[in-house]
Amino acid sequence: MFKYLLMLLTAFSALCIESFARKDEERIAKRDSILKNIVPPSFPDNHFVVTKFGAVGDSLKNSKPAFDKAMAAAKKKNGGKVIVPPGVYILNGPIHFVSNVNLELQKGATLVFGTDAKDYLPVVFTSWEGTMLYNYSPFIYGYQLENIAITGEGVIDGNAKESFNTWHGLQKESQLRSRKMNHENTPFNERIFGEGYYLRPHLIQFFECRNILIEGITIKNAPFWCVHLLKSENITARRVKFDAYNKNNDGFDPEYSKNVLIEDIDFNNADDNVAIKAGRDYEGRRLGLITENIIIRNCRFKGLHGVVIGSEMSAGVRNVFVEDCTYGGYCKRGIYLKSNPDRGGFIKNVFINNVAFGEVEDCFFITSYYHGEGSGFETEIKDVFVNNLKCKAATNAGIVIQGFPTKKVTDIYFNKVLIESCKKAISFTNTENIVFNDVIIGEEVSVPSHVK
Image (cartoon, rainbow, N blue to C red; front, side, top):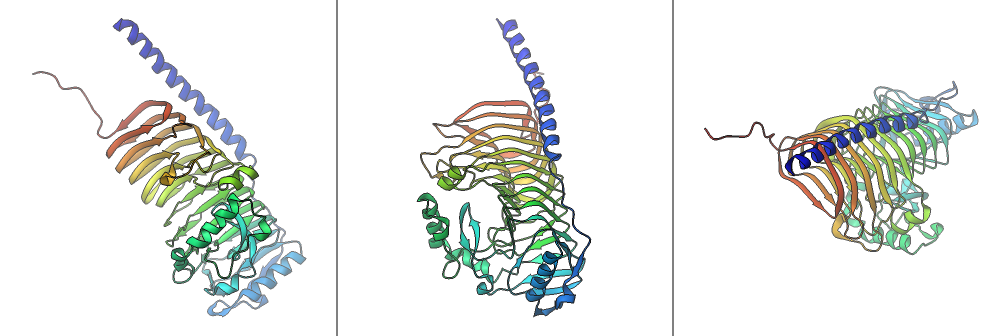
């Protein structure tokens, strides 16, 4: 009997190893096919230097009119490069992009946005926490455009610490109003916020745009999410640095978007480094615009959470690759997939490969019951593959998976995981088919002791 059992265990182990190898081949093929569809935009060889349109980088003069004129001139010539020379430029109001424009912030150039909320009116069509509505304009905003970029070695400073950041404690009534409109399917043109409400604008938002490049810049002090990529596709973000400590200062938020490459980023955010989203509750399920084909690689994580999927993900998220990433400092959680039974939708085909964290609270966390609330629309979470995940210390938990009684989390595979120390190793509830191969949580056990 023992010999038979040993043969079964050996066969099962070999089958698991073969399965992991096969899945890794599938991962590489799928990732490479996605990468072929992500191509940075190119631009006409026209230059529009903002100082020639009246901008002054003296940290005093309002240069917004000059930026507007430069964008208009670029549009008239069918695009080109809007160049910002070294200097500190005050912008009392938003930059509204046009197609075929690369906004180049040269080394030593800083954009500082004004703090008067009225300067970001009239309201524009946007989204807030997964609900479509009209609100203050994002500080840099592009709607239904193609071939757009922000590049260079300059800085975008939202300057929001003492202004919009303070709205966080005042937003609840407006937040609940937006969610009620979502659940009741209120027509978009009746969802008017802006003045008299406290929904903070995004720093950068590209909405229904194609062919986007964000490269080299430093982003700091945002009023809300830093870079919101909404209903957009073919996006490259690389060599960006974050220094964003305000409330809800997520780094990148791709939502209802596809074919996104985020690489070589230095994160330092008070909130999620990357938060992958796909709409909230009824509206997300109704629109059904899946967020898919997201590749995150060669990044340094630092902030609240490294990579998050959710919690607004009601249309579904699939084909997410996190590869060859490490940490630049502390994260509360490393990898975090979160939903609740108000959302519905799905999370599937997530690949974590060669990722390391230092000290965290929780290394890897999946929950179907975020905030312990919701009913009626459980989320399907399945097919998550974790290979070569390392963590120095988890002060709370190593690996947590929380399914829902009527919709269990299934088919989660761990291969070569090392969590050097943690308070709690594993906590699984409402799960099925969780597979481990070469997993060490806590100090590795070596040769067993024996009687001397």
